[in-house]
Length: 488
Image (cartoon, rainbow, N blue to C red; front, side):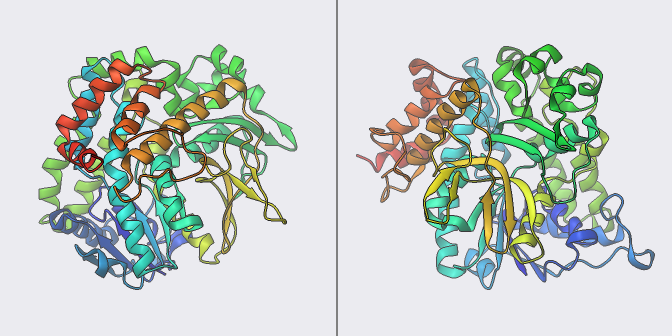
């Protein structure tokens, strides 16, 4: 298959290439096409990829004849039309505004005493408002140039972006994130449960992207999750178990996705972020600004430099939720996550066998009569949700889940309303109608929809703060104000 990566100059692209060298995904891709608007970043990533076969494969992967295998041929381009020609599948991982834009997303929110995080809360809304328009442009180009191709979306905020793309691409788009699947795997190890490769038998998980809960984990037909939640020692053995007090988890009756830390312990998260000398975005911006210019001319050292930067970056992930000095789990630091999920989706869609994965897809379970039921009861059938799914050559099918507890369902419904307001606010001027028949009514102009999204988000919940946030983001990103001008 011919694979194109939109955002081909991105920092995680070498992870995808590395996974294609050996193991279950070797031979899956016949050509890798890297597309990016920044030729300099493309050149840096190409240098890293050229060095990978001389350096390493994934930890634990065998090297045929003692040598690292050759990967698929790589071609890079700054032309979207050229990149999409003959493509079978697209991975999308773009960041409009780069790491400087991420820093503004964080700083505007922190300046008002709110959570400054790139995917959650105010920063996530700002990021989505800037990201959805170019992603819609990519989807439109795919419809014209490679209408049979699938889009696997890494671009954050993954749930919101995927929600915006479904009306354009239908069932040919799926959103991925390694956070939910990682939680399932870590909880299973802690509970002594062996999950068969590519299967989620006995696993119950429901939510939205970065807002979900593991509520069932079976072994031998018995749910072992209550026992895990009662075992403080076992919980201390993995990151999500350490994020929340054991009595809280036992009372909750499920394991939250790590990003729910920002909802359940907001004050501590905000305080930790505000006390840091730099935001996460500023740290990454400084690192990448120094690293990328070195990579293009580093030759055989390019992979080593990149891998050292990757480990440093991964070590700082969600640092505000960990005690000072606590290191991340070594398995997480070894790298890998997004790319394994994405390539597993690609392999299954191409006829390489069925797989079960936690993915972002519409909530509809289509019956034999064509009627739709909800995979997560209580949420609209056309809403993009994050649930275990079966993937095969026929597409992506969500698996039915239990109805969430009322508090969890209420939070999901409120955040989904926010997401749909953001999708409306980010829509092209020629299409400001709601993307679905269950989108929030009476959203008004696109600017009014954006304002309502900030105000309705549980981590803002204030009309006054919403107005200040929107004004701050319009000042940081003048293209937003220019977009609203088309409504008048």
